[in-house]
Image (cartoon, rainbow, N blue to C red; front, side):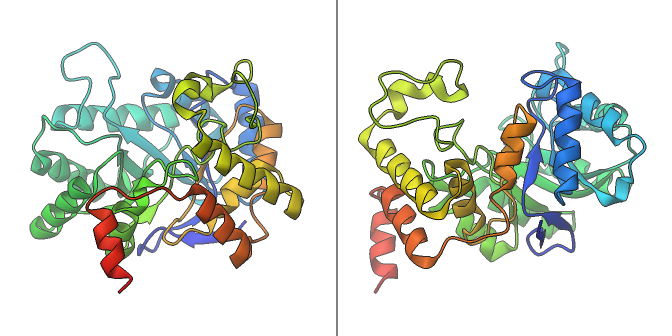
Length: 326
């Protein structure tokens, strides 16, 4: 598996990141450890979790697997913000919660540091200076190596980086947004911002909860039984979606790869993307996802996927795009 730099930092991560959200839920500990073994045997080094996944269970399962392994061979990412208890300060990005949360994550993971510590969402109720100064102390204390964000708007990410640079604090160097063939809004501002600022991008939901995995086909009257994305049926079962699905299926047949591999490969070749986060419930699912590396879509194939998934731009992006083209 290829190793890529995380944005403009010196940190190198595998081109696929393994998401541990299902640990302790959709995947029991035995299966979770088998998937981690398969991922690292394939050259994967980058693993993402969060303190809120399974209310800490995901970190615990990952921590038990980490025992006996060479810690510095791996890049471990986790997140903070979502509730981890009933107490008033058991959520958010205030100093009290962040300091308590990082120590709890380190205990569950069984490690003395987190390689990438991410704020799970923007905190509208805490001054950004409080959050950033607290995160800076964690880097200086050696508990955290790099800082990142998830679920931030372009303005929020830019403000946070500007404040950090103005105060001499560690800046956010990674963004974890939703991004896939059915959700390309990140291209409007977030991805150009990240490219300009040297921020790494690790998209979550690269298969859009299974809609791009081959499980969904034009003509279906209902979602597959037990499918994760089934709850989106009324919103997602549209001509625009089937046009993308049709293009993915056609290229899967043409290239000899699975629909999931085609969808992930498109994302791996997008400008600025560092490592899509693949989540799986079984070794078989993970093995299929790992088949996205080691080959490329050619320019014509990329154009076909781009065209099938293109959407009319809303104002002001339509006007800006028109004048950008001259």
